Length: 278
Length: 342
Image (tube, rainbow over all chains, first blue to last red; front, side):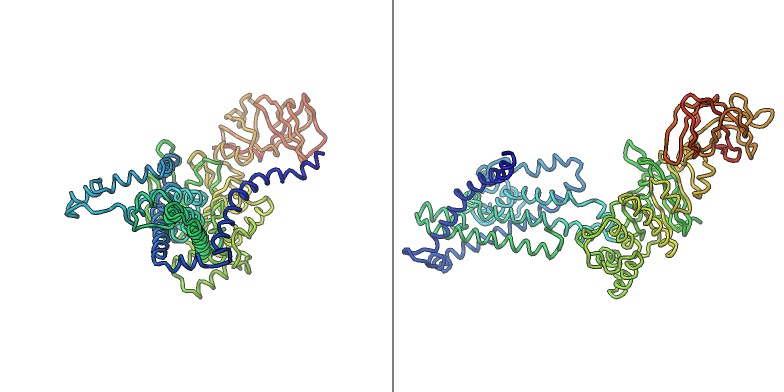
């Protein structure tokens, strides 16, 4: 009796989660995937050829990937020094981490509205630029790719910092001391030891940021404009405004494939720098 | 002139001064160990020499040159860490070659020196392995090779063997000593293991609370401890005071103690192994009456704690025909084993 229970217990542990994922994610996902390859009840690539031959879609697709990559790069550039500082030199580690993560406590909607205030024609950035005489009149900083990128970076920088911190904390301090005693300057020790060993955190962070940027909806919707659509706002437009569910599904599929592809590329790159990265 | 000289060193954090007015001299070619319990300042001393931290006061001279503020990457000292600190993302070859790459050594010379060094530590054929694929002893030897390949002016060891099991530790310390004598480098070795440091060193500096209590050859320290602390450290357990009497030195209760040298009024000590235990009335030199308080079986030895008129004595004897608690006994202190403490 007891033994029989043990034998079947794994089922009890695994089945609920698996069932949930299957019913509410896998089945819908595959049914959507299936629907995009159908046209007039026959198998067809028509939905995708129509998408990729559309100049408008090409623009949106390019913008989505470009802005996501750019935001990922900026998050990496901004996040790396912060994470390194927090893990190595900061005395108030807990507080610094809380500060880094703080933006995550407010909703993306509120954060986007804040950017509208900050970047608007009468916002502090414009006021400053005009008052120091850099520009004669306020510039349009809102509802373009610039404001979207700013929003993305602020939205996802904490995830980059957290991923990096997790890895950097596990790098023993004596490795940089060892490198120093062997003749490496601090910079060289950072580049040859700390950087390669942080790569796995950088990749995790980059995948999180990139995926986040690709799928974020409120930020591009509120900080972008109709001429700066990205894939996620396009899905909404197809589904809700044009009621073209099949085309919306095709766009969604493209998003999934691109995200998976880019994650794969990030991983491959990391293995080049640190062959021991998992 | 000493190769390395530390003068008037003060070091530590704001409220927690670890070294104060500290001095150390190391001669060229010497193998010097810093021995002491944790918190005594031995690792702090080593890290100051390496350049991992700077003293708040004092100077460090190397070969007559003031290196107190020379950054660590320009000191050319090899450092072997307790944790080995191997670079996990590099192969054994790249780990060992790291210091040579920093020195822009030409490729073929670098390969030659790395290969030589790996054969010296018996790791030929392991070039392409990663540290995580190796055992503790092998990693330790990689760390050794990596530090030595740069032909350092000074080798620094921070408890390099304490993560190895006992058998390997003995093997590795012989190995380190062999390589040191083969290459002739000067070494400073930090450890808390007394046996290890006595076996490996030309000189031992015993540290206590940020001060070197005694620095001397192992045999001198073992046979002529300079203070009660050192004496306790190297296994003396019986201490008693002596004062001059009419017939040489006498104990507190007036018993005459024969010693090889008549000088040495003050504190004296003797090891438990050098005290003989016998039935009352038997003959011997420097006799003390006593009563057995505790007996402890130690395998090869039996240890007796004995109450005497001048304090409790610890006696270790190989004789198994034992005495039991409460027995009246007589202790004989062998004259040439009584050590006066200056």
